[in-house]
Structures are given as structure tokens and as C-alpha cells.
Image 1 (cartoon, rainbow, N blue to C red):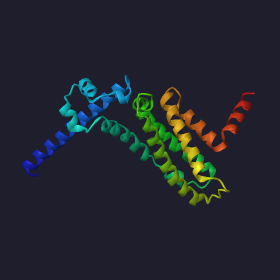
Image 2: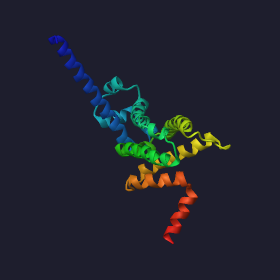
Image 3: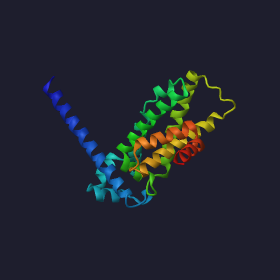
Image 4: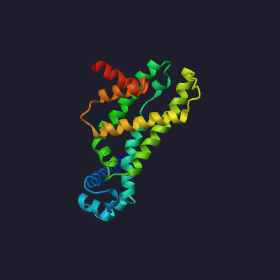
Length: 216
């Protein structure tokens, strides 16, 4: 490799790394501020002062505070979109569905664990109210696509069941799990996964009834 090419390659890598470091610093600063005040009260000046950078540096990296927030949120949404559902989609029985659904929930909870503090700040009263909608949309899109493929394998006869309502029900359950895991980090992911699977496969009333019967 020519020396000048290698030189520019190293410089480009160094510059790119510097940008990433500054971006991360700005993003972490915004999260620190969300721990103290609502997002709508946060200003670019607040971010610059706490991050110890000047405004020109901020605007070289971001258009405004909304872009900073969006970058933080998109990283988490991308992780959720990357969860594999191929085995779930190839399920050939209800028992297969249960096992493969547990695997998906465990992957989702792993994303929660990796982003626990960030999710807590984004989803609480100081965070972004629209982030809940973005999360839900990711789940809706995944479930709609997955359910079409599951039907192909199981050849499900819906017997007049409203598929849209069914998907909405499952997605609402997914959102409940995510929020519950974020706000209750002391609860094991295994317990959350097992409870969700029983509720979804057996139904809430049957699950609770069996639990009470066992206690008696």
C-alpha cells in the first residue's frame, strides 16, 4: 500500500473515532439531563455546559436536540428489529410456538438489559412520549409479518377471529413485558418469560386459576 494512502486511511479512522466519541458524549449528556428534567425543558445550552463543549461543536455533530434523542432511540429500535423470529415463523404446533416465542422474549429482554438505564429514562415522565409509539410500531410490524408466515406453516383457521385485534393483543403484551422489565430489574428474566408464555398460551384466567388451585 502506498504510504500516502495508508496515512490518509489512519487519519480518516482517527477522525471517525473522534466523531463517535463526541457523539457518545453528547448523547450521554442528554440522558444525564433527562434524569433531572423533562426533555422539553432541555436546551442545547444545557447539553453544551454539562458536556463541556461549545455550541459550534454541538452543531457540527447534530442539527438540534431532537436529532440527539432520535439517534439514541434508533439504536435501541434497531436492536429490537434485529431479533430473529425465523424459528417462531416456522412453528408447526402450539408447543413449538410456545418454545420459540420464549426465545424471542428472551432476546427482547436481553436488549432491555443492555439498555436498562437508557430505556428507563426514555420511557419515564421526563423522556419521549412518542418513543412508546415507536416501540409499539416495531412490534406490530414484526408480529404482522411473522403471523402471516406462521399461518402458512400451521394453516390456521381463524374461525372468524379478528387477526388485527389478535396482533394488537399480543403487541400490547410485548409492550407490557418491556415496560415491566425496565421498571422491575430485580425480577428475573426467566420468571418474566415463563409467566408471559403461560398467559399467552393458556390465557390469563386459566393461568391465574391454576396458580390459585396449586396454592390451595
